[in-house]
Length: 197
Length: 197
Image (cartoon, rainbow over all chains, first blue to last red; front, side, top):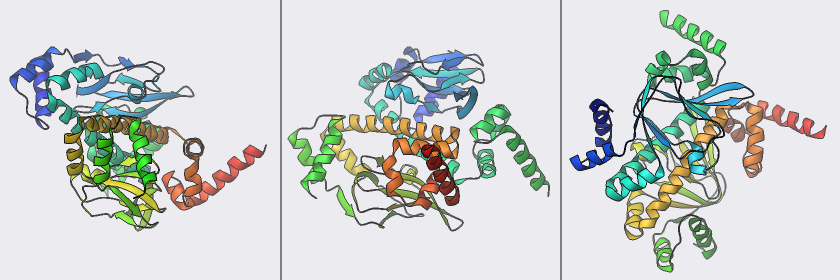
């Protein structure tokens, strides 16, 4: 993996804890950096897994297949982490994960995390802070989804993750916003019309 | 606080880590058990807080006031924990928390958690396991909400948390399910009708 991606990771970690040169070397030696081409499926429905993911570059999509139809529930982009619920519950996955762009992703599991934690206790601290942040962020996202109209959800996304609207196919975006693709088109047209006035 | 509630807590903790008598005494001495009457507001919009909550008995409701209207987003009942997002972000709260039943609630903050962690390292382990479980559960709840129709959401609740349907006022339940109170009434009538056939 190229040095640039390592630096991206170290810059991210530095927001939480400081790393020594030894610690940086230990991270690199863990062999957690992986490249995936657009379209690669990382996890399938029914599959068991121990893996957590952290996106350094690219985009992971989470989706369910319900009655033969894909329902997209999440997009994970740069500096976002996810542990699929099936990893925690130790049951087969209920959803799929795929890369919707060429991506560079860190993959770790609890054994690797235990190894890191035993070497660097502050790693545990970072994981705790990350988990707390994730919990809060996810709670806010869920609350906003529940309390917003489809139009508000779209405007909210436009404000918070404008890049996503460019990067993601419209039908996946519609599903993610909990609306039908044709509703999304109408909604976008309406917003565009308002902005012209 | 009565012994019975302490035992409820110890039984819950025992699912994660084993506790010695000394550790149990230390927990009791922390003075984290609190009783609240139905209707008490624990947190207000605009307020800053460092508190996390764990429900031993009763029910905490989370709600926003948007355009003068209450929007209920969560109910926390027995053995459920919450840390409001404002505690993590260190910003004023965006929502309210109140007790919708007489409740017995553990209240802790990061200072108390740090004290516990320094005395009993396995406490940290328990918090980590709890945070992981919560993250997974919340993710699943959000995904189910996104991918379900209002009727599916109601049936899902009926299966997962049947007690809630009895305990919670209908207009709060409707808001929690993301539907209008009259839609919930119609939906319930429809389900009842089907079950008779």
